[in-house]
Structures are given as C-alpha cells and as structure tokens.
Image 1 (cartoon, rainbow, N blue to C red):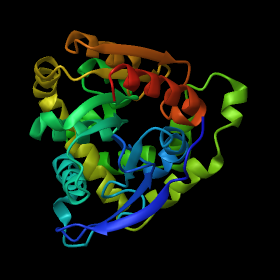
Image 2: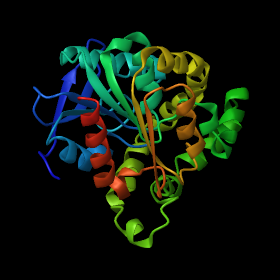
Image 3: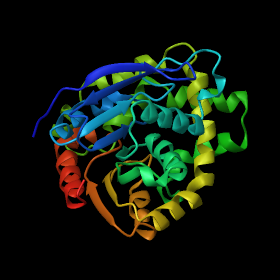
Image 4: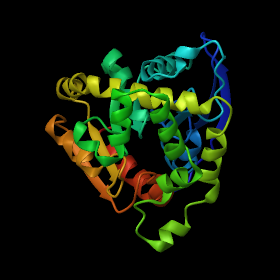
Length: 294
C-alpha cells in the first residue's frame, strides 16, 4: 500500500504564528488529522501519510514549539495545551475542515481532546497510538514530572532538562521497548537526530519545560474527556506500543471503561510505534475506518 508524498506547506494564523504542516491525498476525501508528540513534529508521520493518502486527505501540522512552526517572540502564552488546541482549531478553520478523524499520539492526545470538548460534533473517529486520557497510563516515568508540578524550583528544572532533553533520552524514546533487533535496525537515525537538533535551539529548554509543567492541566480534564467519550459515542481505535514506558499499556486498556465502540490493538514495540509498524498501523486504521463508513 503506497500513496502520494506529503507536500510541505505553511500558513500564517491570526496570532501571527507561521504554522508549518504537511498535506497529502485528495482534499475531496475524508480528512484525517495527525497530531504529533514530544519531542517530534509532523516528520514522524512521513511514512503513515503516504500510506493513508491512497484513501484519505491527510494533514499533519507542527504544533507551536515543535518542528518548523514559527512562533512570534511576544507569544509567551503559546506553550500550553489550551493554546495548542486553539491554534490547531484555527488551522482547521482556515482550511475549512469542519469534520475529520484524528490520529493522536503523546502531546497530540490532550490537544485533540480539548478540541473535542469544544466541538464534539467535528470528530468522526479517534485513533489513539499511545495517546493517553487516563491516569492508568501514567506510571514511573512521570514521577519526576509530578515532583515538578509540586515544586517548581530552579534545581528541579535543571534536573528535568538535563534528563529529558539529552541526546540519550531522545534516542531512547525511539528505541526503548523495541524488542526485535531487526526492527531496531529499521529506525532511521535522522529521526532522533532531527528531534534533538530542534530541541537544542535557543529558548527550547524553557518552552519544553512549560509544556511539562502545563501537562498537569490535562489530568484535570480527564473526567470531562471521559464523559465526552461516554456521551458522544465517538469510536476509538487504540493501537498501542505495548512496551512504552511513557504512556503504558494500561492507559490503552482504560478506554474500554468509557468508549462503547472500542477496539484495542497491542503491538510489540515502544513509544514511536510508527517507526517499526507503520504499515501494520495504516492497514488497521484503514480497515477500521472503512468499517465505520469513513
């Protein structure tokens, strides 16, 4: 299964943000929005976009603070999840996208779920690939970040930055949990190398710490998000790297508590599952979406 190569584009939003995004497929077909996570960008979707573009119109923006999106220096409030949701919503409005399915991963999940709370009728279906909405999904990885939520001190900020933003940690997000040596060899070094290069730009430490600090607000929204799942009837496909230690597999299974139309697929891989299982994920997605007449 193969499709069109994604085209790189950009547009300027009312805030002054110059939003970089990738687009593939026929715009007359149903739209799938792909929302990336930390520390990546729309680059993580380069393979999936080509696979989905056979049947769908596919959009993948770089969220503010990531990739090649440019945020004016005056916008100090751009680095919250509420702002990510508002920016993404305006992006959709400018492109006149009023109905779409969404693929969420990592930071893309709270971004999309905030949009869902604002406009529940807009989302046709959710594919969650290690995109969390339950406390069950947050285990030991989050302990230092929980301490940061309790005590925002210079010492804790430095400890987190030294640990979370290091080249070794960036690479580990791609390689941890990949049990097959052959699959491990398939992960291109340019993935974590690009992420690290962008993380090391001036100002990025404070920007990324702002997101980690603000992540606590996502947990506060979990009850409302779970109520949205129950009331909206939105179908959810959770396709999860089972060996992920950032958003653990219990978080995937927890969707079943609230989602009536739910399917769970566990993959023997880690956090960035698309680097090892892009074709498997694309086939599962297309089959599931077609079953839902999308």
